[in-house]
Amino acid sequence: MSKITNFMKITKLEITILIDLVAITAFILVPGSFSHPLILFLLILSGTLASMSASMFNNIYDMDIDTKMKRTRSRSSTLNPGTRGLIFSIAAAMIVVSFVLSSVFINLLTALFIFGGFLSYVFLYTILLKRRTTWNIVIGGIAGGFPALAGWAALTNSVSFTSLFLAFLVFMWTPTHFWNLSINNVDDYKASQVPMLPAIVGIKKTEFWIVINTVILIFYSLIPLFVPSIKLGLPYIPIAIIMDIILLYYVLKPAFKSYDKKYFRKAFGFSNMYLMILLLVIIIYPFI
Ligand code: HEM
Ligand SMILES: CC(C)=CCC/C(C)=C/CC/C(C)=C/COP(=O)(O)OP(=O)(O)O
Image 1: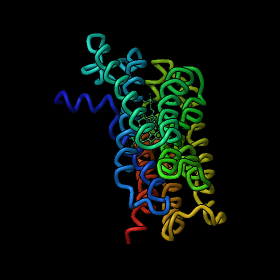
Image 2: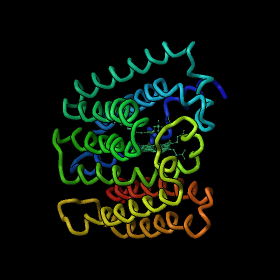
Image 3: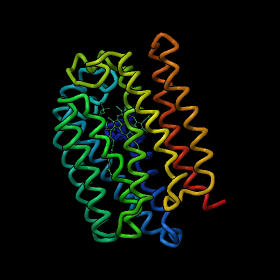
């Protein structure tokens, strides 16, 4: 792979894209948002720099275990003791530029929300929780909620029921998203002594908690039906009901297929589709 592709791998760009989509969704929901394209550009730039920086610091801190895990060992071709200093400096510069851009050209609250996402990913999840508790991704999942708070604050300098709803939607979605993936890498997590849920309680118990979390997520996703102040557009509820049903199907299937790992991987893949489609429905509706 080229040096650029390798570098992009350690910035977790594919994750950053969905993180940006969360922020864009909250931004678009603010009335009159279309007349502020420059603010939207600065929000995406600041959020992208922060998310990539956080991922780079995460990879620097996790170099010892990433070289042991099949899924992550290819990162060492880009991030290794010889390049660690340079990558650290680039990541540090990125988060500084992100904070200056957002605080000077958007507002301090938005900068603090973006920085909050960075801090919760790097310090709360990666350093404090990841290697200590099976609650690591549940509590560390708050990192994914900050982009929604930042997106709304970029134009309003405030928090609302809508931005809080979106932030908690991502928070509730994270365990279903990650636990399905972690089952495919359970041996790696055991070998590197990272207490991801399936490495501690086994695959069947993890499937149970994935189903429980998904049922809670499904009820949570339909809250706008009962809270008029959370305005996500007409198509949101019908699309959410359809996506909820399909997500439940994917999440239940492994239990009926002898816990074959390929069905957990399919459920992980669909979980990303689930969140992306819910966000895109909200973003596209004002344009139709
Ligand atoms: C603590 C919270 C989270 C954990 C532990 C987690 C974990 C992971 C891991 C381990 C991967 C695979 C990365 C790789 O193999 O390179 C992944 C992929 C991904 N994550 Fe998450 N994630 C979390 C939160 C989020 C959030 C908040 C989002 C976006 C809103 C997100 C979006 C994605 C996407 C889009 C992918 C790539 C999927 C693919 O490659 O098909 N994740 N996640
Ligand atoms: C606003 C802002 C900057 C928000 C940041 C939110 C963010 C980047 C969340 C992603 C969390 C994530 C992918 C964790 C995986 O780390 P891992 O160490 O479990 O994954 P790995 O094993 O693939 O390295």
